[in-house]
Image (cartoon, rainbow, N blue to C red; front, side, top):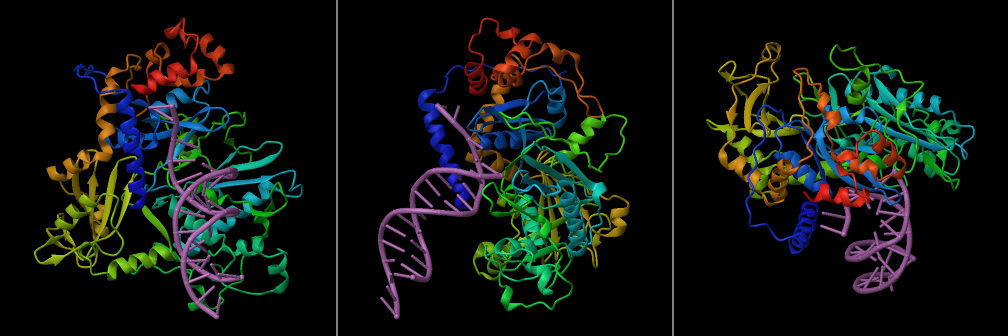
Length: 555
DNA sequence: CAGCGCTACCACACCCC
DNA sequence: GGTGTGGTAGCG
């Protein structure tokens, strides 16, 4: 709540400043786009929030990427486009050298890790071995906590090491399994690395081996950091979730197995302090995660497939192998499917909040079960209105958001009416799916028979007030503005999308896009860009960098 | 005109013994 | 000295 408020305040302040400088034009300039051209979406924003607002207003499957464009202070701008279009420009690696995926908050995503250590202060560390041991530990934890089977062959292993630093990204390619969002991933990672925190807190990290002290794999022993974690508490109706419990001492667990030896995770920082091999700072909201084949600005080391990578994407007729690797590397590229399981891992704080929420008598809490309201309260309310019929008070058990489809999936409880069989299921729950892109909703269900026949009810339009509310919310006011600017860009590259989703268009080579301006900002690449004829549209422009970036961005 | 989301750390106020 | 708070430098 405070978060939203802060963002809004910031946005309004910026808006005020913007209009003071550039008052609204009173001239209406209508434009038409050619109907035969599939839309090309390639928009840049200075502000992340505006980029996301644009995505919301967009019917296409677009995503937000962050581009570093100034050496030194890591300044970024935000690009909205489709995976296909990005790859088209990106693959040559002549432009867009420093790109990051923005892992949207609240969106379903893959399990991922950022691993690193300083080679100089850890001369004895065997990076590959550590990666392999970590993968082993994570797979075991996935099995123990969620009954998910996986192995090193499901882990896309990317390397970005230098002489000084060992650096890896791991992106798990689990089959029909994903996490609710990257904050849940972070909770999971902290939970399964719990035993290693002791090793950092203690003076001598060989202590756990020598004492022979036994405790449960995910024991609840408190640690210095104040983070401690509980045992899996399966959902009453699923067993997909686990909770980190900070009230460790109130719930002692009997020892079940000896603590795994995670001493291999302990490395030394530049200053010689103990640290974990796993970077726990990458599980925050809207985290920027460097793309496959991108480097940090000012550095020349890109993420490339690691020597010891064991993940190989399925061969595809339509998509090149490199493109497959690229798509696999994207953390938030998880599509909805009937068989997909969504894993959650809550902190005990959230769990307590949920319980408080559930127990509270406020009018708002009565309708929604637990703490399960989505970021779209109007839609929650509408879904609740759908499942409160004929005297049955249904509830929202939980929700998941799929960024690629802009799809909200609500697991419903208590209300089990299924359109397929024309009556309520006896023991299986139903789902309500809300397609924000097409502004429709439909019903599916967990019943094996319905699932087997891939049942999906007819689509019904979302009521006007839900759609309208959503579009007119003031936080979206930038969307309308950026939409119109789309047609104003005279340099928009034409595009055509083949049925298989691969963008292919020779004309793009003659077009110009914002990318080139950005990359041209770097002197070294300027010459190359000019050589490739990319700058000819601005012949005579001496100051390529800021001027053109601004020109594009001010649209 | 222009990045974002944290966390660790500090200074300070207030409280209690 | 213990505890809460509010602001911020700096990291990822």
